[in-house]
Image (cartoon, rainbow, N blue to C red; front, side, top):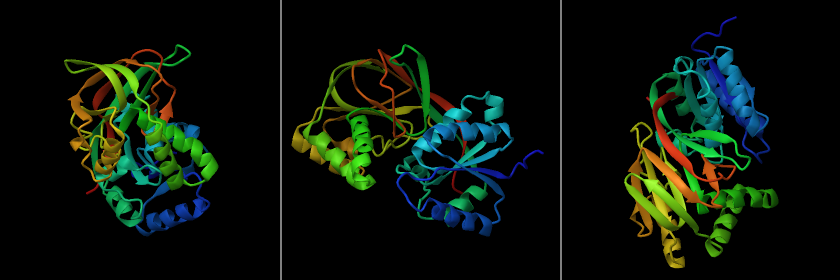
Length: 311
């Protein structure tokens, strides 16, 4: 039996380390029922299952897919949709109820993890906008060609190191906030810089770089001027700052003035070629990928996903 066009397929991705997973869903369920939304829900069991479940929804005829999760879960859903031909993909509307450790793309549009009533009301209006996706093409360590799309950003270097440390320390500390603080402190006092050769616009940058963010949206504050429907990517490259400059840079990042730091160099472009970035970790929408082997390319694909936005 065909699924009615207005019925939502909800992909619920519980937050890791939260004991009251069911309670979070029940709270959202009450709001969906109160506002008269027709839906079917499936729950992801692991990171690996999100893309598979999104694929199942598309194949079963759902034209409204709402991810209850964070940036990484959205990333998995987007990469699933990009596996379909454009004529299929353009029939699907993708929405989000923020429920992750990182909800940067949802926050860009004004969706709050603390206001389900407003989020559901906005999504029920079914207002959509075609948004851009960034794309990274690379070769993994096994020599296989890979590609990954992103809604928010790619981090290369120290910020990706922090993601890795946060994942490792969280296994020990069992606290997202504490693991993040510890990871930042460790990175500050044991910071690295990486020898990179980067082609961006007409420039060739060949020097040691601490971290780089390529943003389709705000990039966790590192690309605050990026807009996910401009057909362009924003990039910020941070040369190795002195210790006190690093502390001031963290303050500017928190206060939303990251581009004012003297060590931050911004670019706007459609393509970036990383010709050399040996050993620099890479994070895509908050999740590490296998460190690329050799050179890789980051590009933009304009207006390829229908995303549900506020009224």
